[in-house]
Image (tube, rainbow, N blue to C red; front, side, top):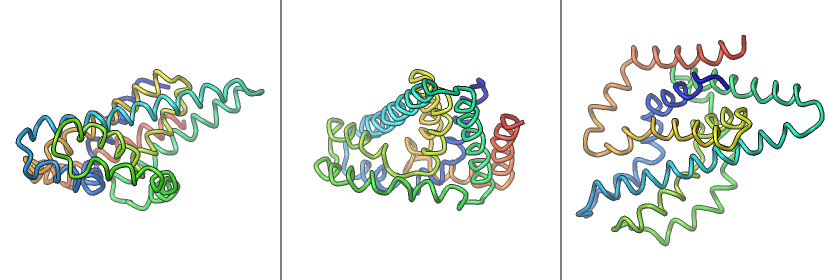
Length: 214
């Protein structure tokens, strides 16, 4: 897995910010209502969310590593590598505005989310850091095409540690949009929505995927 994958996933998280806010912005905004320790709650929520991403990345990396114990390791590694780069291509198209490029991945995660969602109710409404952190842990498993596509890259890393680090890079990329939701979000959203920014970021991520395929 080339080092460029870390940068690619960070950019995907950062420039896919409007999608992140659409998926999680409501609950982040709820943390701002009547919360005296607003920043600490935002940090706790996002820390929990990113920890879940890293845990999912570790699991994906471990699964990729386990697959290499099968006979014919070279074909398995090749398939995983192709999958990761095809998902980067899909992410590039998503950033270019082809939002349906990731829709199928979100449908695939609905079953798992139906099992997890009821657990979030015990932490709502979140009024303390103690509630915000586990709420973030749970909401980190919300069906999200961006997350699932990033996990494909973590899977191809074939290492729990590298898989976790890849998802950590992705999670840190999503942090500015969600951490600043309701504070500086209007300005940040205005920036990431600019056609030139979206086209440049989409072409960059698309280029990472095509380069990997070549």
